[in-house]
Every structure is written in C-alpha cells, then in structure tokens.
Image (cartoon, rainbow, N blue to C red; front, side):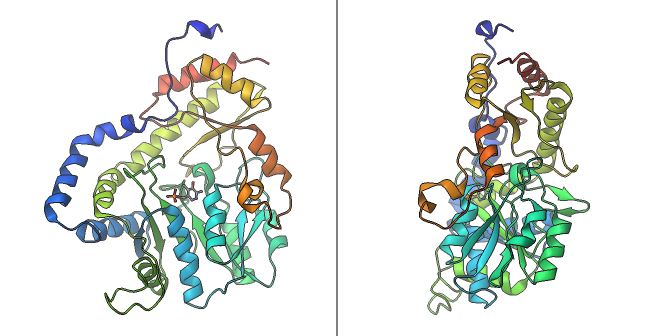
Length: 375
Ligand SMILES: *Cc1c(COP(=O)(O)O)cnc(C)c1O
C-alpha cells in the first residue's frame, strides 16, 4: 500500500479528546469543589473511596496522591504492622513499569524480579517458587497492559509460603477473573489514575484497596503525616492524599469505565480477527476479563515497523523499551539477566486502542495497514 498519500491520522492517545465528552460535567464539579472551600480530603474523597471499594468488591479503599505512593504505602504499612521488615524480599515481574520496582526499593525492601511469560507478557507463574527465599514476604503481580495474571496459581504459591499478594492494578481497573475484579484478588492492591490510564484523573491520583481494616487504617495514617490526630502522629508518615478536585472528577469517569473497557475489547477483537501478517506477532488474548490498557504486538525490526506505521498516519508507542533491572538507577544492583523480558523490550510495539481516539472502523484500517507491512 502506498501510504504516502494517506491523509488520515490515527492518534495513539489524545487526552484532550478523551476528556472532551466530560468537559461540562468536570467544570461543574470543579466549581462545586471551589465553592465548598475544602481542598484536601472531605466528602468527594470519601464518596469516591466508597464507590471504588464497591466497584472492586472490596471493603476499603484509600485515596493516595498517585499509584507509586499507593504501592509504597501498602509496603510501608506492612512494615509498620510488623508483617515485613526492611531487607525483606518482594517478588516482582521483571517485565513491568519502573514504579513497581521503585515502590519496593523506597520501602527499604528488596525487589526480586521473576522472568515473564512470552505469551501473556505477565509474570511467569512457573518461575515464582524458585525465587522464594526465607526472606520473601510478598508477591507483587502486575496485571500488565490490563491482562489479569494467573491469580489462582499465585494464590496457591502465596498460601504455601505464607506470602502477601499485593496487586499492582495500575493498568487494569475493571479487569476481572471469573466473578472477581482485579484489585480484589490479593491482600491489597494499588491503583493509578495517572491521566493516560484506563481511568485517568486530570493530574496525579491513586488509591489502595483491601479487605484488611488494619492495613487500610495504616495506609490512611501513613499518607496523612503518620496519623489522623492533627497533633499526635503515630508514625513518621508522608503526605500522600487524593485531592477532592481529582476525586470529584474520578467519580464521574468511574461510571463509564466498564463501557469504555468493553469498547477496548471490541477494538482488540478487530485487531485479532483482521491482522494477518507473519512479521507481526499478536498478543495472547487470555480471559474475557482483559481490559486492554495497551494492545501490544511484537515485531522483529520495531523501528522499521514504527516508521512505516507513522508514514501511514498511525502513531504507535513502546511499553517499555528498557526493563527496570537494566535502568541506570539499578545498574549497581545485584539483578541477574532476564532474557525473555529483554527480548520483549526489544520487540514490543503498542497500537492505538483508546476507544475515544479511534473507532472500530479505524481499527479495521489500521489492521489493513499492518497487513501491507513488509520488510
Ligand atoms: C502507572 C503505573 C504505576 C504508577 O502509577 P503513578 O500514578 O504514575 O505513580 C505503577 N505501576 C504500573 C504498572 C503502572 O503502569
């Protein structure tokens, strides 16, 4: 196909477009918060926490400033509660966003990466048990790209070794396994509402969900300078709270998340049925509960492919070109090599999948463009 004449543009992600349908309602709730005069905590935050907990089927949700803090506060709370001690180990997938590793490091714990599964891109559950040592305290599965991990196996390993399961649910809000949502498949879960996530705020925001009352209380206390009494803090805590202006906007957008995730599935289904090019490896589809935060294919000569796509008007992205264990901040670490993760990092390409930015017809066009790709 001669793409040089193509005028049509297929944006990877245009956040202005994503939020445009909400603009009037977002302005309304912002006006409401402005007039209310309460700019940290308060009713909007409490209501959002209740709605998020209910959405996930959890007993508690606690707002945080961002997703990294949500992960970090869970770990720091387990330390405060005596479940973990500094120097203990947390099993993480080698193939993830850097935040998963940083949360563990920041808490004074040791991230122990486990290799990924080439097909699901998620943690290879068959490699987890080998990574367990007497110092392992938790497994932190990441539902990467919105695909739920194999939680039944992870639960069994966690039970065998007495480990906590902390879900990094930053990319998978609304995903499910059977009747259970991610965010309620472990002992605690962290959410990110960074603007590009499936449920995005208009700034940074995050949350922790759990059924454990002591953990929820400790996360809330640690995020509020170490306690809820104004002048007698129990812990040397942090300032990591969800702003009411973000909470108010998230409450509106949460109502649509299932419908938007369903539209992501429809786009993924079109890619699956239409793309037939031996140079482009499609992702394994997993269960129905996938929410397609990213639609990630693999291509041997990624840069060549991306240049071709761009000439045809299709923006793509890469999640992620450098795995955490190879990043500069960890170069003096003791990590071994993870060949599958490193191979994925060389080959992965994310196609447009946001249902507000591209239509089903666009997904069909993009599939054709991919089918015409040659070396
Ligand atoms: C986005 C993300 C985070 C961190 O969330 P922030 O809100 O950006 O701090 C953590 N883990 C994963 C897998 C993410 O994609």
